[in-house]
Length: 352
Image 1 (spheres, rainbow, N blue to C red):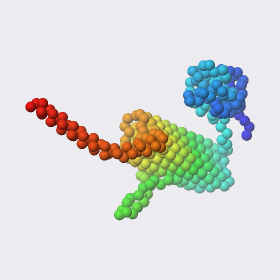
Image 2 (spheres, one colour):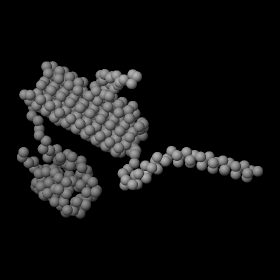
Image 3 (cartoon, rainbow, N blue to C red):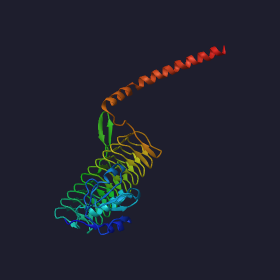
Image 4 (cartoon, rainbow, N blue to C red):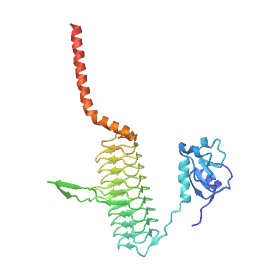
């Protein structure tokens, strides 16, 4: 593959950045501050990496105006270096681009609608009634179930599974191993025997959503599981049946969201968070890593549970204290009652 090169002047114009350095300086890739060479563009977005700025060998650095003060190297000065890096990353992305057309080994059922501009990879299966819009890529060995719809510009990596009646908006990215529309965990118990409940809802996913590798989104039991516009789901997340996730909420890896939970807009759910079913989380909530959410969250803000890491010996002492809390609480109540009795007796004696 031929390399992609840009001048600093071209990149500055694209970003609307202030350039400090020669406009004709060539860069051909992106790298970290520590690893960058003269041909690379890098960025400083986290203060803990500022120590590497003085020694970086990068051809140029994306910097805020404050960080650019006193820096002698080439710089593109922007208000948000990380956002600027995100924009430029697409210029250097080496991901292969699919060509329009249907691979000879793909199986497309009669009655499926595939736009001529779409790319259908090797051994992909498109079932009857499915609709594949313009400029969609369906990766090799992916499966699109009956009556499912993929909106314009969607991209499915190899080995993505969409069950039947899944509706996906525009420009949705789904990584390998993801399963959308699997049957929810629905059973009725009769005298110790589990009877399966048919999951007859679907999944509805908005525009500009990204779903990570091996993440699962179950179909609804009656109505659809709903994923709003702009939602970002990391790898290995479990979204149970009838969950609703509001627009622009982001969720890190290994979260588990139980059935019928409703999460608001613009939330950030850190890695390993668990949520019980049938609760609601309002808009603009940040839940820190490994938190267990067991009740509604009705006020925006940051929420945590559990204990932070500490040396093992200290943690064992803390755990021992936690086990003693119930007994300590009862003893404290007894002491409070005794103190109240003594105080009351003293008051009576004074009155006398």
